[in-house]
Length: 80
Image (cartoon, rainbow, N blue to C red; front, top):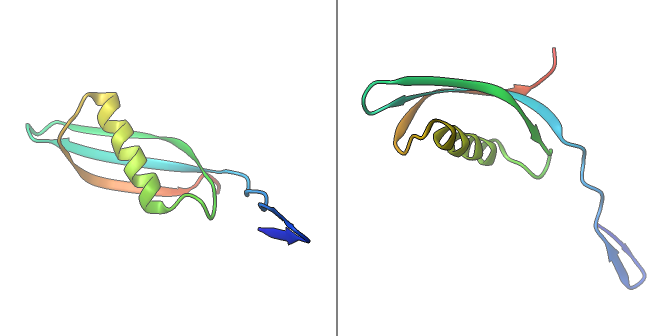
């Protein structure tokens, strides 16, 4: 945040960085689902935990799952 005289101007947010994720879950009845893709992560704003929680909720909604256990989670910048 930058302060000038009597005005406070918020600093510009950094650009989102695309991250690749893999999330594997297992339901109570033994079904397993793996989903992967990319997600934009804003450094300094999004945390690993918040991103995980969002992705977990999205996978549950996408597959119509209310209860499941996460077996595997990976989140890395989408670059080589």
